[in-house]
Image 1: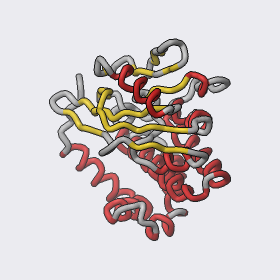
Image 2: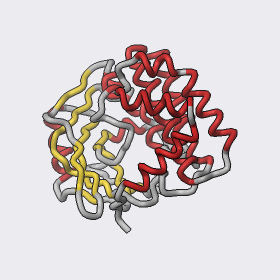
Image 3: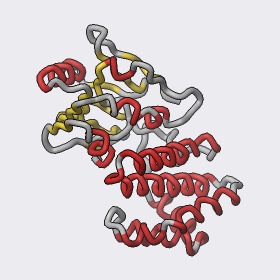
Image 4: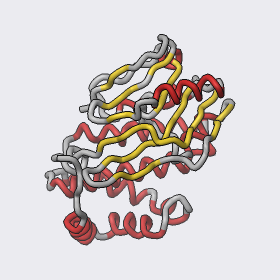
Length: 254
């Protein structure tokens, strides 16, 4: 469960922080100054994935500006602008009439289009100012429950929406949905949950899109082989999945 804290700067700006994470002392000052300088509606910084004994840097190489009516399409296709709300500063007006859905997982993903479509300019800066703590309580460490299916439902809604309004990003939306299906399938198999009907449904969904998976450049060769295995030999796929999980040294915070 994420607990969100609001940070207001002069009442005109809003930001969100996960209660387990931490910030650089000057994070919001930096984001605010950049927002004013570039007249941006959203400023997105880099961040660190914080493990117990090491950190992983996630940042763009140089400051980049996204402008105009195509801002959603560009940001949706960019690896540096994701739906997570916690490493951004927003103009508060973007959230007028926008609320997080109650009782849903991935609630920030659900409001992504509603907020970004209002933004005329989005700035991505190269500085890493947010520290994202990696926890054992992630989806792969928990016993599977059907609330986790929210990510698939949201990806399905995004796919329909993108197909109508941003067709150039349709293939990216398809990939996100396929990845979410594999993500949930892995969670079920790892947790040992008795959800054979759901496993069958997820495999069928991936099998239907095999032609797309094998023909697109969005998936690498390794990903294509893995997804092909998902649809053709579940026993072997699960065996390899469990072997890989056991071989990985989990170094999360206790």
